[in-house]
Image (cartoon, rainbow, N blue to C red; front, side):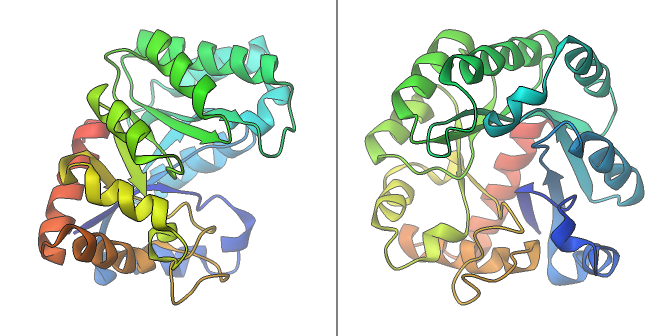
Length: 253
């Protein structure tokens, strides 16, 4: 079975057919999904999804573009939600210097505080990093040493990926790996061990070829698995089996 380690089924793009989609996942070979939080508002939606659908687990955290909504009251609420049985990670958290919606110092402050919370709770973290390679790596080295982590939607060099792997991190690979112009990510997949890769969709975003530009969903994860298998020179079955093991190990499932 395939494990989608990072999805956003709380997104309004799924409002028209969410129930139909999720109820049909197992028939499509999708065995597990972790629904990642991005905003404070997403937390309750994710909690309800984990209660309604057996294959869905969730995370709680705030995306760097949205940390302006965080305060001490919400942070305490976040800490309480992390005690729920089907909430398995802190995330997605990190730095985003592409959109620059929040000041870099504010992003860093809440990134570190959420990492420290994850350590106190002994929980894995989902890391979002866009055009913030050096600062993200520095913070991870200082505050996430020894923690389970995935660098979600990985977009940096193979050299840096190898450094993250040395730290014990997983590299999240999604639909982008199927794009013709994704030479850098293909090189990353080629050079790091399969034991360090987890598959993800980030749906409804980043649909793989041949659905690029359309709404993504976990049913398209086989296209990612097939591309990874081709790059690694192994069978699709081996990719599915190993990445499921990796995802279970990451999220303690």
